[in-house]
Length: 293
Image (tube, rainbow, N blue to C red; front, top):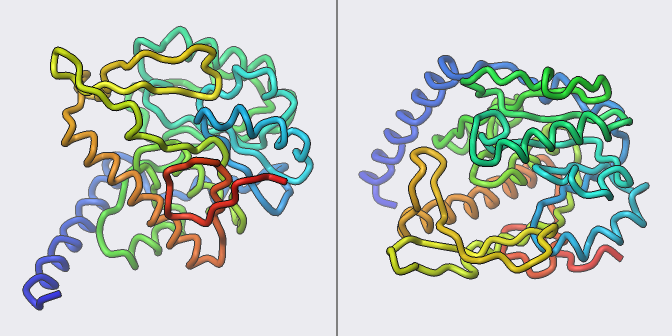
């Protein structure tokens, strides 16, 4: 890298650092909620993080057989599955804004909160975004004393890598690179786990891409709980609610996969290991293990 390029990069990182601290001061704060809360009743040496990819349907039976070996972290709508009660995740994670904002998914979100309230009979920590501009009351939606609610930070730091590691180690970082699983990985590392295993994290985000007759980018999105093949639907931004262009979607997908590389490097710096146990996963940042046996 030329000297001029190094200077420009340093200036950009300096600006990004100043911007990060300004945004955190206004939008969030500088408290390590995750670290202070700790693991609670969770006691195993390794954690299994469950994504919602279609491969989880194949992986769940084996995980249930070996549930005494893991602490589990589930995400999004996993509580809809009857096996949620069998698995008894120690951790649950909600990251999408639809969980605290009124959207077209409102009825399903409300039903999820009712299920969590009714089904959780064991100590469970629920992680939610600190940034909550509508002041959604999670405790009112989840009046279950077994569920401990802990916020996490969502403001990304894009400056100096050394400063990012410093922030990560103090619970002030964010892995909000595009998928709830990445947030889960960062939380698990912050809780001190040194072996993280990923299941149902297919990340086949380029499969099934089509552009329809109205020039909208569409994708056939599938999850492990789907019973029928999904039809391609426009890939929509959350704000504003309009379809992605191909360039925008590829740029965000690239950031997501770069986020996995950042998390891998951070895990390495802690002496921890992230193992991708999802057969057919498109993530290339982690060591792969294709079988739970």
